[in-house]
Length: 284
Length: 150
Image 1 (cartoon, rainbow over the protein chains, first blue to last red):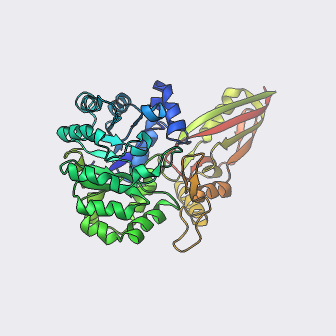
Image 2: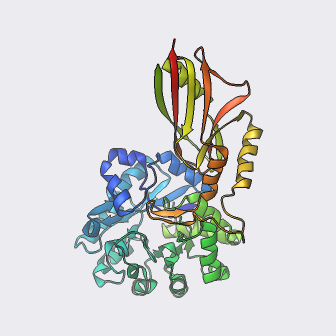
Image 3: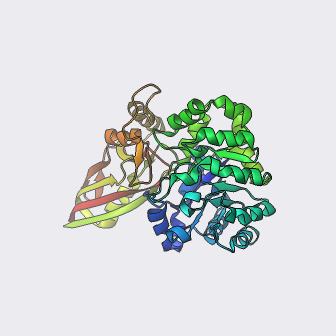
């Protein structure tokens, strides 16, 4: 099966993990603020099936310093990936920890995780804070991508300023070999995020943007009216990856919306699979 | 007097589908010891339903397709959208399944049957369906019996 990859999911509602780790209820409800019912892993997989995808990247958030919470720790992500081969686990590390590079190296080399997720707004660290650079150097050395939350954050207490795309420019410029993904099209700064991606080929954008209306209408607005679809198709087709932000939105709904935008078949293959594969080093 | 209730979990596997749960009602009645009374069933979710109709695949398709025509998932382009399409802070996400809630209202969320001599009284063609309008999801249906024992 070589269908496609959802590059942006959060395993917050997995019932089996909550049964094993009851402490995971709190970050789901009080840090990530998701109110839906916990579901068996099977629902997650069926959701991928319904969307015509075969794999999902799982993203944790290390918010221990700022929220006294881990929205999954790296060991829990690895544990879940061991339960289901269709999951691709990312690590999360607090860039302010002196041992952040070592923690990342452990997560990648020992736990088998495949990338790094950072959430500047929740972790309260601007992406271009030089104190985070050792972590970026380690990611580059390990050959893994970094996915940054960018744009607006829903969570109460989070500040929008952390998601401003221009705060990522120095990272893109100072680490031209480091592949970075700006999540959520960095809405409401889609144009600025597109400008970064146009200028820096190591900057990718994921499609997990939904802030009003519905997936079809929102993505049409962001990827047709704010920035013409032709820009994504002609100039950024190698730098767009499909992401849903499940479970804030069902994977099926976001996949249907992206497929309905009007991309060519070639571009859809890139968005749903090939670009994600390249970010992951060539293998799912 | 017997009053017993059971919660069953129904795992839907698609966005929309009808799942036959008739045997669950019959089992609950049998295991309860109910002789004469009623059995009722209700989905506990607002984007799913319970429907009683003839148990054939072609009708399953027609029922779901008809409800989707009456209450489409997304308003047609240019038509007024759903008020539900907004951020729901208590859920931490947007609401954009108004059409599925409306299907649930149109199709109903419960059903009941008489029980006579320990058997569910239903027409020969009547099948009890759990109807998923926004799956795949693990859903909960309650089945309760009330009446006299043998």
